Length: 184
Image 1 (tube, rainbow, N blue to C red):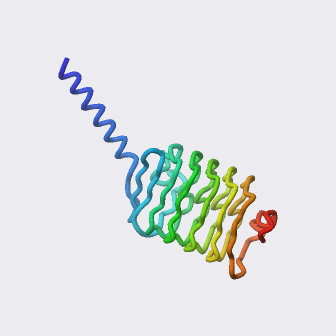
Image 2: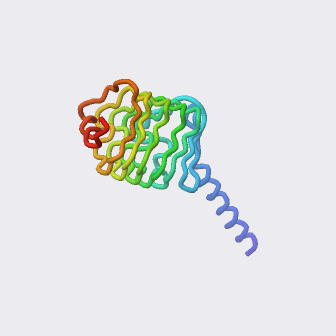
Image 3: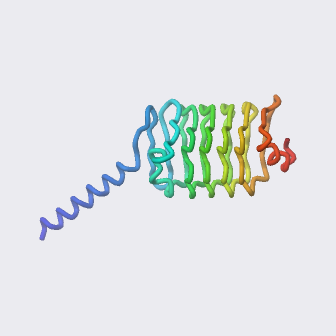
């Protein structure tokens, strides 16, 4: 009986260890860890684009992600990096990020606000499309271009804070949303 209990405890420990191991990993020079609903990405360099068939390394856990912390050193947020993180409510983007790629936060339905750091110069196609609860976004003066449908189908987006010193290139599909707020 004692040996059976020890065997059961051992198997539970192994399964628990595997579950913890499965929620962290590395992709190039970047490391990621998902714990208690918070996905932390650390290291240095560009975040790779997610493969459309497999998704990002944390793709299988996207329903558990509620908060994302990207640490200083990451230089861009890759294509589709956090697409379909339906329960994501908050994102911390450091001043080292220069570009937010296409579909980076596509269909993050619970995301309500985003502060984009001064280091970002480009927001690519559909970066925040279908973020249906997104109601405010801060865009710094260094952003030089916002591509097609960057904020497409953001139905509650009523507050866009901009601080552009120089004229910005805004595609015609983005402009109506900015004009609606009276900020462009």
